[in-house]
Amino acid sequence: MDPTIFASPPPPKKDPETPPSDRTILAYPTPPPQNPPTPPAPPQVPMPPPLEPKKRGKWLYIGVAGAVVVGVCCLLGVVALVVFNNLQKKAAPVQSPLGTAVPVNFPPATSLPLVTLPPAATIPPAPASDPVTTSFSDDFSNSESGWEVISSNGYETSYGSLGTFEMGVKNANSYLVSTSPDSIARPLKDVILKVRAEPAVGDTGSYGVVCRYQDINNFYMAGISGNSFYIGKQVNGKWSFLTDPGWQDLPDAKPDADGYFSIAMSCIDSFIVLEVNGVGAAHVTDQDFSSGNIGLAVWAGEQPDHSGYYARANFDDFSASLP
Image (cartoon, rainbow, N blue to C red; front, side):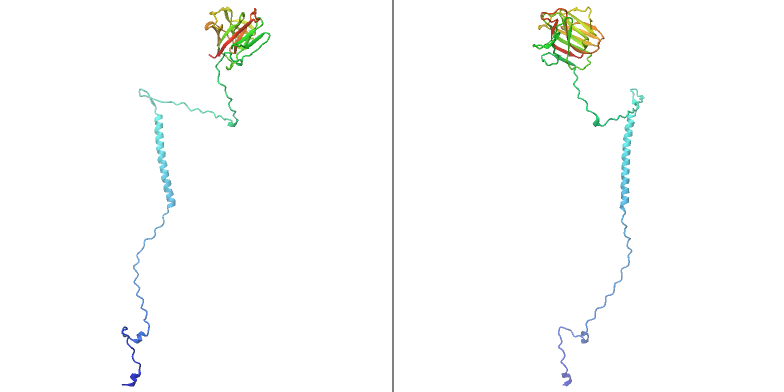
């Protein structure tokens, strides 16, 4: 055996799992693989241009405004049509029964002047108005009803204990008038007076009612004296009868069960009417007095009664009313 061959190291043991290969190849790292070929670029397809954003602001407002204007115009047109039809109906001529058109003429408009009112704060409140009184009555049961009570050497008035009003004159050829305390509005022009009156025992004077009383020297009076009645007037202190003759007989000289006569005197316009016990006694006309007060009266004669009174009477159930 050749000694040089044995002197070399034995050959490496073969790896059964590793296939034989060239040593020189295994001594170097495996070179990196080459870059794969770049695939060809796909053909360029032209893209549509991007859409421009819509300009909505101005055109949107213009469209809405146009729609509103069109709607308003339509509404106004409908209203105008309705109004026109109504005016046509109102202005249509009135048809007569024969079918002939009759024009209707309206009066021209009147222009009223302007009135300037002061501020509301400067207008004073209206005073409270009293209710209108058209009648008055008094049965003299209340001694505070307002008739004047006097006592002197010549005259006397008082509320009686039996609910009457008493009047007396102590001088011959004189008279006494007591005016009514009623609240009927003055001046009092037309009025109807009623009262029940009783003469005192042995009285020789007259008693009755007065109307259109101005003062003690000017008035109308209607009264009773004994079995007679009269209507007269006092003008500037001068007495005159309106009945002719002055004294006239009573149509019914009988008093009622209480001894009272019913006396009614109406003074309306220029007429003066006297009723006694509900029966018309006399009526006269006179124009000296057109308005005045009302009241009761006694008139003295020349002969006193046993008590020294020349005229005395009791009154009850007085009333006054406007006709």
